[in-house]
Length: 355
Image (cartoon, rainbow, N blue to C red; front, side):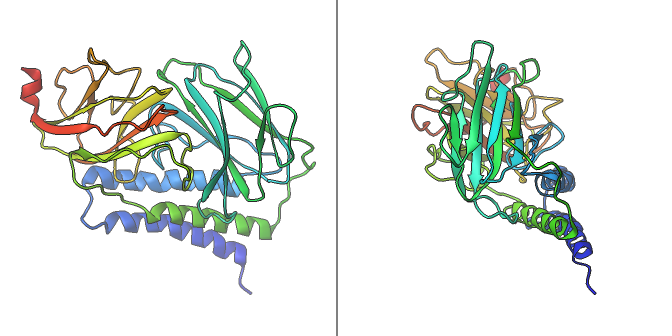
């Protein structure tokens, strides 16, 4: 007799092993630093999959961190904290919190299949511009399918996950926002049986598989940034619904720098990040591989110039490649008044910037 639980467990571990195969067999071959990151990525994806699907409890959810300096996946960055919890659209939840020093925070509810496949739409978003926040920074609202008299985020029949986003301009020193979600009238005991755990393991495997389908990512041509995407009317996966984005790539010799000139519309937050082909940042605990709008030194006309290079050119807006000769560039603008203009790029010799 086949043990379905044992098979689901084995299949999940096989999916993790498959990450190594994807890394080792990438065409064209990955640079050594990206290969090492690929091995680490396997464990980041497994950790999120286990927290979201194996442990996650819709009856009594707990918001857990899914991004950190040692937990990188899905387009992370140095300025944000993300937390995730599964939800049941038939339940009612009370969400409380304190904004801390965040310049932007939100909770987004995603809808779609509930079997590990990536969410295919946003059910709703509530952010600090629509929350009732008191003078001490506290807030409260309800998640439910039935309308509420106070602050309320509506749930629809396909709602599956809630994701928080907290952005700080000085994350090393700013006070991090605090969130809590609690079900109203949860059951007294967690449901637990072999069939349920089998379903959870299968969902975790599916989620991990879907994450890997898009990796590694390559953007052409190098040393350019594409036209920014406007704030979307629809999103895929766990993307934000109130941000504009732009993506590019760089490929530089050790003596070269990429100079990026641009402007940013009025917005609550923006940043630029360097990513590996798995869409995660280089190690920002040692050097600056991302920069945000509050850290940027602006030109007199309000424009900005960011310099990407391995060597420090002495420019205030230098972003280090951390020894990577090529990589991805990602920009995001939260709640922009308009779609940002396309940044302009040019390759120069680092000596030109230091002379």
